Image 1 (cartoon, rainbow, N blue to C red):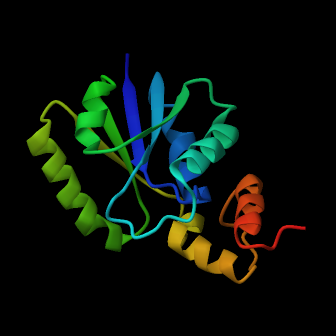
Image 2 (image 1 turned 60 degrees about the vertical axis):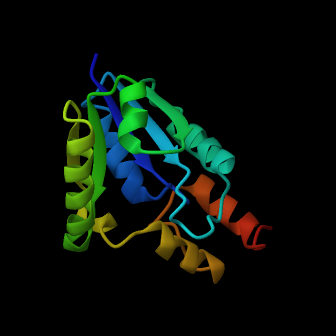
Length: 162
């Protein structure tokens, strides 16, 4: 069985993340979208439980997707899930340097795991969760950046809900 793990903070999930997921589900028998409890991120907007809930709602149409969360090293989580591949997305050349270091570190820690990079579509290459939160904080238009379910959650979080 081909199992892929797509880890991330998903705070919140963006259309760029969805692009990577929609293409990854075709490559794996099972794709685990795993919310990382990232200690290096200062303060997430959404709790891990809220992020998992959003992902489960948005990804429910994919029968081979499992949503989960984890704390610790991605490679340890992937090995525990019997994954063959860690899936990562690249938006622009600026992502490459840090992703290159992660891939080499992961390969050193778990040589049996491969890292698969997918370039996001050009129309999503500028989107990041940080940009989404900034636009949302000023009640800006998010329709090209995130799914409708996320827009509603962001409006609630920032007090713009009707």
